[in-house]
Length: 264
Length: 249
Image 1 (tube, each protein chain N blue to C red):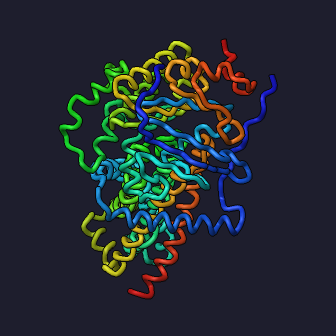
Image 2: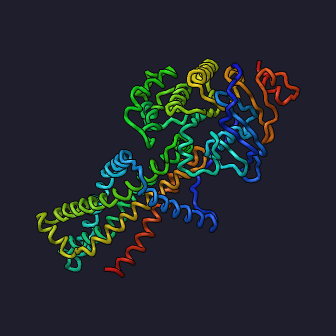
Image 3: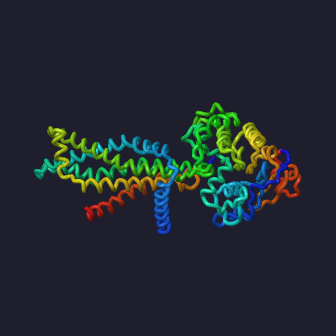
């Protein structure tokens, strides 16, 4: 019996400019539909709470480990470098600024996109392929409201909380790293770390994470909800969701940093 | 199955057309379903039998034609009215389409608790009653992955019955099942029709099932219904294509 070689799984990226703009339009109309459906009753409260748990709580260990390692390594790398310039005392402040303004939100969101974007894409893609979404629709339930609105809403609200927690854990990692070189009390470290942080630094940094969360939710749901038939499309939906949502995080970050520098 | 005496027409499909790209699947389909009647749709694989069912329930939008259900023009009504009408129509998917993250109980409760006028009393004992109808009360707390293909289809039927539909659309209810389980499902369909007096439209290749449950059979060929009649009439048809479906014995 001849065994045919397995088809290599392809990443579905826009092949032409027409397809690219169709994708952008599809994502935009999906996001608008989410915003319209979000405020329309009935509200799927139980499913939303379940998604808070699945998307937020279950992502915490991964985000916490990442945050801790980022804080620790950033501090370990910075101490010898700044020491050469006699600025080792600025390490807590520098780490806090880097973590709170940029590294914390972006790295946490990229990790979140990998875990949640792919998870949502695969879950909804699988439901689409096995006709579970059609089944909801024919039973008089609005599957968009039940599956999509709950997940995007949970991703939008949970990511900022995870980023704040990851930032705090990263600062703790930095504190431990400093204590490897020399003893510093937690109070001294925190006072030094927060000396140059103002509300105008924190507000844009947190605000952009709502947009990151929403874009990850929208892309994951869009890819899964529009998966074509066949099991291969489930993998493609998950892959594409991660790639596009990661790219969206970087693009939104770039725009938001520019906006923040104008506004604040 | 015995003749249907009630002449109330509850579903009427007229001049339905549907193409996918350059492939015309349905070129002109006309179909009527009376109250309490069971119509079986026969046809070769890939000829658009399931597409007819999906057009009727609104999962696929036809290119042209009309669909009237309970006297309402299904294609032109608003989404909210469509959802209300859908509650009166059950759809049994080929795969069962059970929600795989929910238990059997949650699967059966799902369509009921999302109805706008839902009261907790609507559920009391109903899940158990529907599971009893399909002989699977013991599966109430199991996950779909723990059930066999036949059990999943029976649970799918129980879930369809939860909303007490007046019409049930079956998409290949016995495909992929062994002959014994297929026979069980066919008898279950028949029992439910007798017990609940529902009208049914069944897409199947299973001629035993068609013989057992149908009042009328229509045969789809080249996007149109090529023949219509009872099992016995079509078995003796002059058309060799139609007779080909009955040569299984």
